[in-house]
Image (cartoon, rainbow, N blue to C red):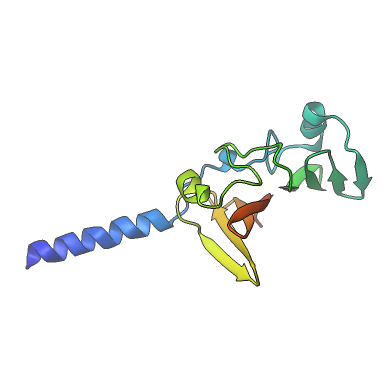
Length: 144
């Protein structure tokens, strides 16, 4: 009986470990854009944005929000840039589990799903918008 209880307890602990975030903060990025990097570092890599409206900058394959001289948020709907785990827009959403493990949060609104993964220190978040089983948008951001 004690052996069965120990096995069940171990299984519960193993399951709960799978559900917690295990992503390193520096692994939350799109292309070479990392939340928290300076605006000057961003422009030294990608050049000047194609369009600027206040703190919202638009580049060819992504958009960023700049706050206090740092990248607060990055988003893309282009398949030209990948996350450090190799995930791109257009891929089958089943790749998310193998790349990041279990999502920390899943929201479903109509025919769209949103998978959220947090860095292990909870300072950053990466989310994937999914429609009809395929990734349509990737967003990375600093968390308050």
